[in-house]
Length: 134
Image (tube, rainbow, N blue to C red; front, side, top):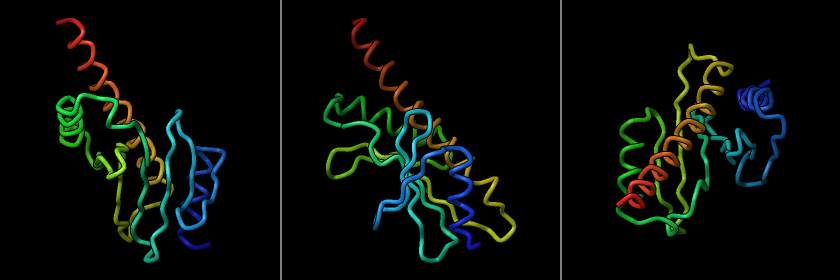
């Protein structure tokens, strides 16, 4: 089995329903978050993302930017970005080393994206609560 097969197998161990979407990659759910695994032709780059966590337009821009910057500084490996369409996306790219094991890194990536998603949402909720208390 090629490395892509092992990656999909590891995703299925954690997230039962994995759906292949032509051109895009593999979609699955973890703790209520939509995630994607986007295969790389070179097979040594693992690219996972939360393609749409929230719509940026629903938040005060300065609070959103502050929460995104804090999340990017405080959560290792995950990068939060605002896409051109206004979606807030979280990305995790990982270059596989020869000695790394797929069964160890794939669950780590999925858990890291889940944690970062919740971390960002909690930052935004806290900013909203503090604004309401003023």
